[in-house]
Length: 179
Image 1 (cartoon, rainbow, N blue to C red):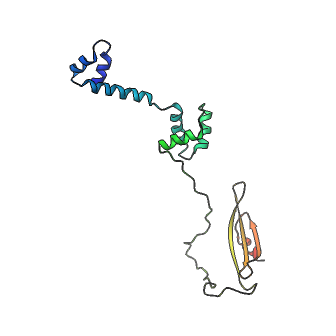
Image 2 (cartoon, one colour):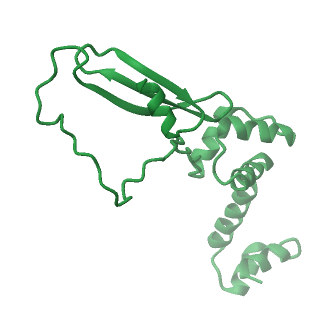
Image 3 (cartoon, rainbow, N blue to C red):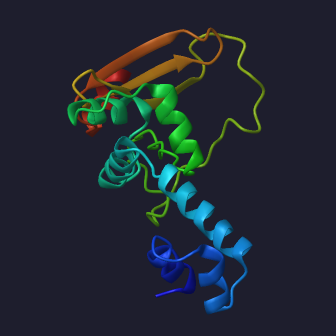
């Protein structure tokens, strides 16, 4: 038991100054300790802040103020987003933003021969149907899947001369777009 706690326990029976002289501490030190104890009691965090920290940790720091507000309301705490934002900022809690998913289908380290780009040293074509270029792009669908679009474009006129969409990316996707 600390000296100050002893004084606190005995102050109902004896004067504080006498107890301070007995345990050899200044009375001002006891009163400063007593004030600090009252401030600790007054500064206890609300129950919703404890629930906020717990929910934030349970969801692996991915929930922001909108989702956390819904979680806290389900637990019975009616807290606004601004108050949540302030509490999170005070505690240095920052929600992680997930990276957007982009499918990776190109393997640049395959070790196979690559066709040289013969257009790099050439002038831009001025007549239509002399040079076509092609690319495959990914189209996100509403259900979370992807569709693949292969298109051919004329370099001179910038018009799309052929295209094909498919759920997978076989060779036929390219050949049908070319046909």
